[in-house]
Length: 195
Image (cartoon, rainbow, N blue to C red; front, side, top):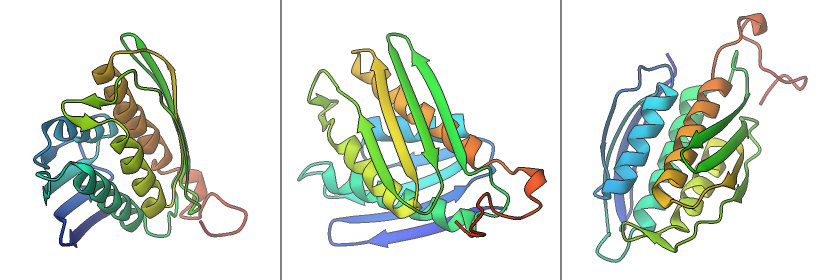
């Protein structure tokens, strides 16, 4: 079982998160930001991850701290659950259409974080959330998970479709990358012998 529980408490946020990489897509999400709850529920369902998040943050200021810190904690949980990454395929990518939108997500669970985020939303906010905060979410996640992550928008303008496609494609790519390859016999997918 590749599972993890992570807690983060600061003066700005308090987050409790549990993750099962090899789950069945069940989720219980409460971030006090309904749109983010929806995106994380999609992530869990389409990646077949079991995910529970209870988060409280200073959203009376804005959503920045809460969204970024959830990215931090989810990234930490992914890294913790995968441990030494033995047996996983390591690489994953997915091209996902969502009505007018087409998004590609490609990733490498390499231990070397890097984010390429080629997303051009047509508006600055969705449901009172600054759309730039999703960059902060994925930046924090990629750093803490040690993932090289590329998120590329090919087409589309409708914001809900855009972010839904991003979270679904990320889930599918991560699911592929964390799949066990029996040919590795518990080894890691690297000539270095470690990731």
